[in-house]
Image (cartoon, rainbow over all chains, first blue to last red; front, side, top):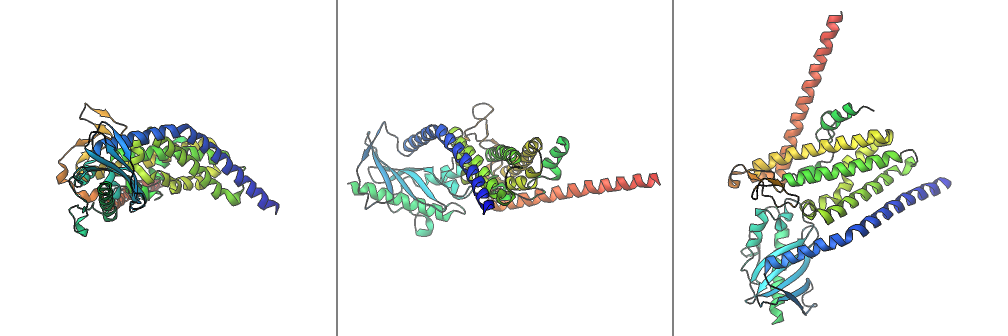
Length: 180
Length: 230
C-alpha cells in the first residue's frame, strides 16, 4: 500500500512540474502565436479577394453550420467567407472569396492537420498547392472534384481532402448567395 | 565517458535510423524538401538532448515501475514547448511539418535513448548522446531530402535557399531552391511516400554494406596480426 502511494506521489509531482513549465511557456508564447494567426488570416483574406477593408455581416448560422464568419468587402468586390470543416485527418479552416456574381475568387487554407506530402499539399505554398487552389477560381456553387462530376482535379493521394475542400467551397458560395 | 566513440556511434555505427531502425515514420513522411528535413532534424536534436539530460538527471530518484510513464510525460513536455516556440517564431516550419512535430512525442528515438542509454549513464554522457544521435538523425534526413528532392522535382534546397533575391537562406520557407533540371523531368513518385520507402531502403542497404565491409576488414587485420605473432 505504501509503495502504491509513493509511486502515485512521484508521478503526480513529475506531472505537476511539467504542467507548470508548460503553463509558463504557453503564457510567454500565446500572444505571439495569436499575432501570427492574425497575420495569416489577414494575408488569406487579401489573397482570396483584395479589398481595403472588410465588414462582418450577419448570416443564418442554423442553415450554414460550417460557416464561421462572412465579411463584406468595403470596396464592393464581394464577400470573404471563413469556414471550418472536416478534412481527411482533422478540422480545416479556410477563407473563400466570393464575388458579386457568386463565383469563387480564390481559396486559402489557414489551418489544417492533413497528412504531410499528401493532403497538406492543398495548403502548400509550393507550386503544387498554388496550382491546385487556382482551379477553384471562377467556379460557382456547383464546384466539385472530377470524381463527383465537377472540374477540380483531386490532389494525388488526397481525394478525401480535395473533396472536402470542394464541398466547403460550394457551401461557402451557397451561404453568400443566401444573403441575397 | 568516451565522446569520440559516442560521436561515431551516433553518426555511423549505431545511427538511429539506418542501424537501430527507429523513428522511421517521420523520416519517410517529411523528407520532401530540405527545409522540412533540416527543421525536423534540429527539432528532434533539441528535444532529444533536453530529454536525455532530464531523464539522466533524475534516473536515480524515479521508481523503476513507473519510469516509462515519467519518461513519456517529460518527452511530451519538451515536445509541446518546442511546438509552441515554433508556432510563435517559425510559423512556416510549424505549418510545413504540421502534425509531425507533436508526433515527436511517440518518436521511438527519444524514448529509445531514454530507456537504452540515459537511465544507465551520467548526465554528461547523455547530453552528448542526445547531440550525436540527433545529428545522426538530422544527417539521414538531409541525405534523404536532397536525394528525393533532386530526383523528384529536380531541385536542391527547396524552402531553405532563395536565389531570386541573391543567394540567401530563408527561415520562412519561401525560398524556391535551386532548379537543377526542369521539374517536368522529375520522377514525382520520389516525392510521394513510396519514394520515401525506396530511398530509406537504399540508404539502409548502403549502410549495411559499408558496415559489413569494414567489419570484415578489421577481422582480416586481426587475423593477419595473429599470424605474424605466431
